[in-house]
Image 1 (cartoon, helix red, strand yellow):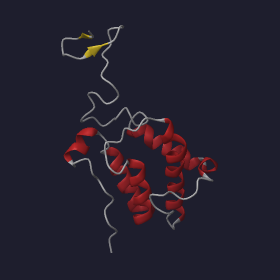
Image 2 (spheres, helix red, strand yellow; image 1 turned 135 degrees about the horizontal axis):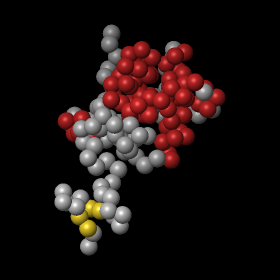
Image 3 (cartoon, rainbow, N blue to C red; image 1 turned 90 degrees about the horizontal axis):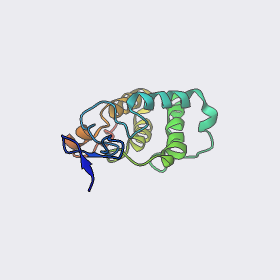
Image 4 (cartoon, rainbow, N blue to C red; image 1 turned 180 degrees about the vertical axis):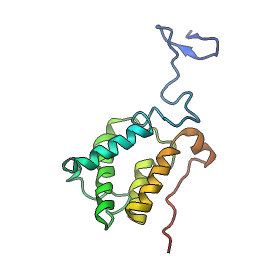
Length: 146
């Protein structure tokens, strides 16, 4: 039988608690599953924008076609690079439906770089299980304004 600490959490042989990837992060800003939290996600996005050679050659995303604007297209390529090269190497952990990367692709296609970028940033800031539970685990991209 596994050992437990005074709070009822399981402990491994070294005496450290073994709660899994998302334990005790229900309402924190940094979600450890997804690339180490919001700030490291933003840093990864920034680095892929600075190195466009890594983002070429992936083609169109099935979630949405590429946007028309130059800045939105560059952001789209960086998200597409994450979806093709980085995401398959990590376990799925986004609590929302659709996932944050699918949300980003659709937001850039529907709203462009400025509003789409704001929507993506807001989504990354609320990407944690507590916020997802309050929204019913669904968070679609809003329709375009006319």
